[in-house]
Image 1 (cartoon, rainbow, N blue to C red):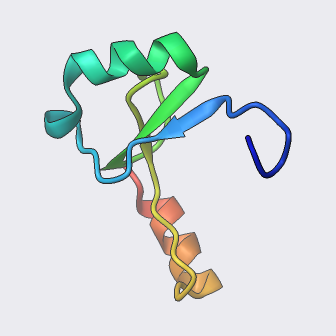
Image 2: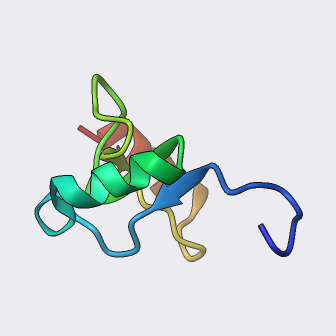
Length: 74
């Protein structure tokens, strides 16, 4: 927000799986953000918007690897 002058509307738990985040962190995130993503791999379905799964993509990933990650996310 300081660098862009825009509000930060979404949060990413840095190393958070569902077990390490817990319900308290999700409730806190809900007070300040519109959504939050975990480190649990998956696609968005009927998930709690403060415990969303994600597909991790890294700079070293090729287009083919990214495609495979997205297609195989459960």
